[in-house]
Image (cartoon, rainbow, N blue to C red; front, side):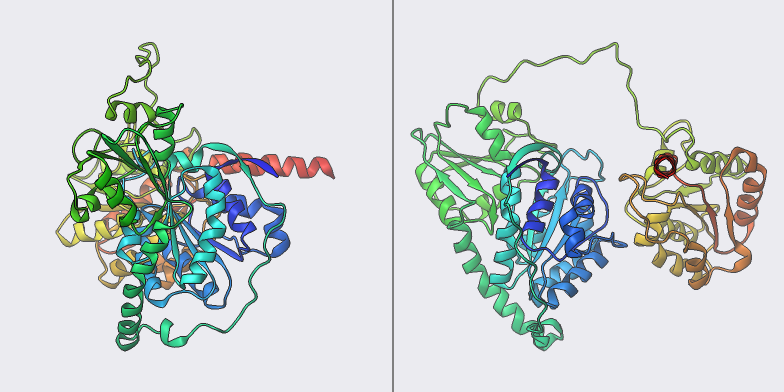
Length: 536
């Protein structure tokens, strides 16, 4: 059966067809569509596949390990910076090993289309001594899911699968199976000594996992996903990984005259790389992201072959690759370049008309005009756009949850006023612990949890703390008299500005929760209600 699928959708369908029992994820572009596809899948509903969003990537990884402990197959999905959040359980999962198969999907974002950095998740696989798969096409992404789950259970290790934005968000026809594999039966085969990482146990597992690396490398050298393609012209060889292999193929529609080594399974198959370095005068490394393969070649490869790529300037050091960029690196003529149209005015992103965040920033700016050198620490979400005109309301945005702890640190340094602005989903993701730090020291900060009742930036997914924020703040120790809920509307501006002013002047930790539903999800819900009424 053939389906037209995004790369993300091919991954999701591949996981379902491989006998998936649970997907655990926090929404983040470009990975979000994987979980959404599973949530909408009739097969997933029929089989009771877990697909509810997790509070953050760390809880997602840990829950997946729990499902694996009971013998079932679990998928964990996140964007690349989410790997930083789940790094503790991810790295330790190499030590515990798995019972049921675990695949960790990391979607990297070269060129930072919607991200803070260009982090390359392949380094996490190498760091954790965990095998890594990197599909070069949507079909391969689909096929690799079953292979990755099988390999995970065969080697008793989790598998990291890395894709990039173009792979995740481009479509292709994919041949899918007519029948999905049944889910694993639950079992009690997990060995407690492997999962209890006391130093004595962990040292034993460390020796075992380290010794496995030679086997993993040999398997990579013999993998169907790693291919050495012969070429007559040995002046140059090309090593291409993941989607970059497609770009190389586009440069040579009649077939590449040079030897090509396609790498889609790691550890790096040194045997195949040595063959290329021995046969060719130079080797061009074409890889999306950071010079992961190129750096390893320089460190471990013998021979006289000259290594070229991102580090030597043939390919740009940052940003996404394109077929034209690859052509230029190979000394070929590129396609026609089109100049930008001067008649089209730039359109920077902006908060939606009717968005409650607009009223929050309007009120905050109005109050902060009364103070000398106020500082507002922002966070990850739609409201980060408050940095841009017309509001120019925030002074920092570093990572999920950093607003509260940065405000606290600034207050510790003597800054006043120190205000944190954080969204509802980001607060439950990573902000609660920072608020606990602030409460424990009664830090002189004002925290604004701008609650639009959804995870708006990634498309309106459920927010973990909806209707729980007052209770959470009370539980963390915020004083009742310094915990306020307001409705951000122009008519309420006098009340909102009064409360902000009073809490800034209070010498301690206070929380203000402006609450109004995201205008986008509100419109969606109204349409759904209208359709439901029409059916009646």
